Every structure is written in C-alpha cells, then in structure tokens.
Length: 145
Image 1 (cartoon, rainbow, N blue to C red):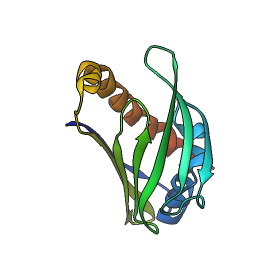
Image 2 (cartoon, helix red, strand yellow):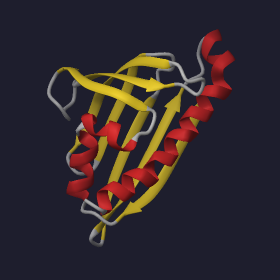
Image 3 (cartoon, one colour):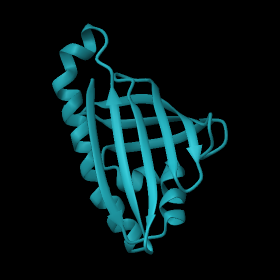
C-alpha cells in the first residue's frame, strides 16, 4: 500500500475550508499540477459527483483521470476514489474546528495491485508526496481571501 498524509491548521472557519475544498473546480487554484477539472455528472460537492481532471505527471505529460465523491459529512469529511487513471487512489479530507480555525487532515492511499502500479510505485509515491505540498498553498489562499 502506498500512502501519504498531511495535517495542517488553517486560520479560517471549518465552513469556509469545507466549502472551498468541496467545490472541486477550486482545485486549479491550489493544486499546482491540476490543469483542468470539471463536473461530469451528479451535483457539485455531493456523494456520487463525478469529475474529469487533467494533471501534469512528474515526467511532464498530461494525465487524464476521473474521480467520484464517495462520502460527505458537512464541515467534517470528504472522501473520494479515483476510478479512471493510472493510479486508482482513495483519499480523505477530515476537518475539525480548533478555536476559530480548522485542523485539516488529508490522506491518500493506493493499494499496489498489478504489474503496472508495482513498476511505477516509486513515481506514484513521489507524486503522492508532492501533492502534500499543495496544502501550504491552500492554507495561504484560505487565510488571505
């Protein structure tokens, strides 16, 4: 199993953090490798919503993927699963009110199944770690807008 996680505290309300993250179209603002994302089906920010996205790979190629929201608890939790793409990861955002701010925990997991994933596991793991640095950008945006 490949795994990465990050915990940060953001000086913004849990409602603001949840709202921003639950609108996937905001991903292009804070996730540096995301170049395009749009809702394909379902309702934005709700269980069953399906999104198409394009990201830049570590080798500079455009990777297309599709993910779906699998669980939502307002102002607390967003879970998703990549259903089409080179790595079918499972991710989770957990939010907790701390004073006037928000403690945000993000984790992403990828079961290593199949030869392709096994062969690419080091690159995929690095991409998962790289994704964690985006949370500094998210923190900056939410605290300054």
